[in-house]
Length: 133
Image (tube, rainbow, N blue to C red; front, side):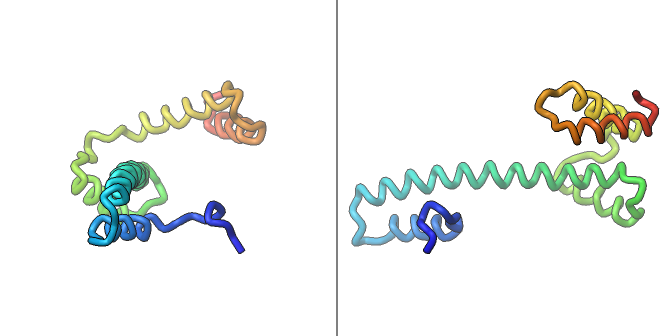
């Protein structure tokens, strides 16, 4: 049997329970205040997680525009999604700028003490293959 601390609770269920506590006429005022505070905390956490997810998703669409293996249809879809999010795809970095940043990232990995030996080896191989080392 798993302990309560060993599994993740579904945030949607927790939020539902807190809302039920707040609206229950049999709940004490102290319990309602505690539930309201906890609900505010969870709302903030959920908003941060949602923003992080949105940023990652939009980053994927931006990357799609630079991927040579992506179809024209997929690139058009990515442009439409980015425009709907208020991002002008024409203002995104050019392929040359993107490649320069990728290479800079691999070069930085070579000097970062927190990067594993395997990752440094991969970075070195990538840089040699692109004649950047």
